[in-house]
Length: 162
Image (cartoon, rainbow, N blue to C red; front, side):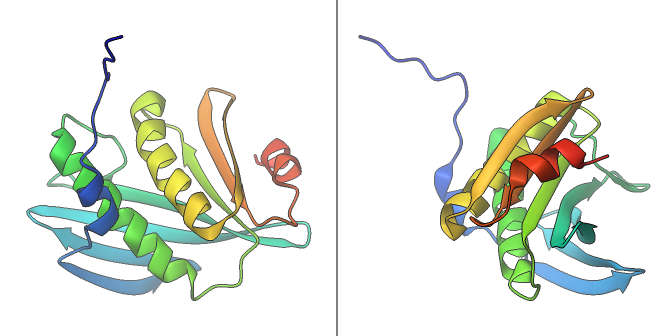
């Protein structure tokens, strides 16, 4: 039996890569990090949200396109993408330790297919390492991932996200 892989991901880059530099600041109620990874400038954002008694963080990231930070992913090599995923995931992992949270969300509204591939890698790692549950599904054309601690009804949160 011959196995064929549709895509490959350099696992060590995804696990070990961190930003060369990363500076955090507050923009309103958002916690924003601006990081440098090789020649790329990347913005990571933790945006606090609540649902009933639960406290969550919406996680996003964007790359600098020369004019502004954009969540649109253009053609980037697999090696570079793996490094981006690693740096972003490690930044989120380190930063969420500073918060009391019940759930995390990652929502893809633009380039949903590409974005969900990246967000799924990030979510899978966060969920597995923290031993928490997750839902990855489509909602109104968007990709929506909710990761929640074991005692949180993430289905209810997912169903009620705007």
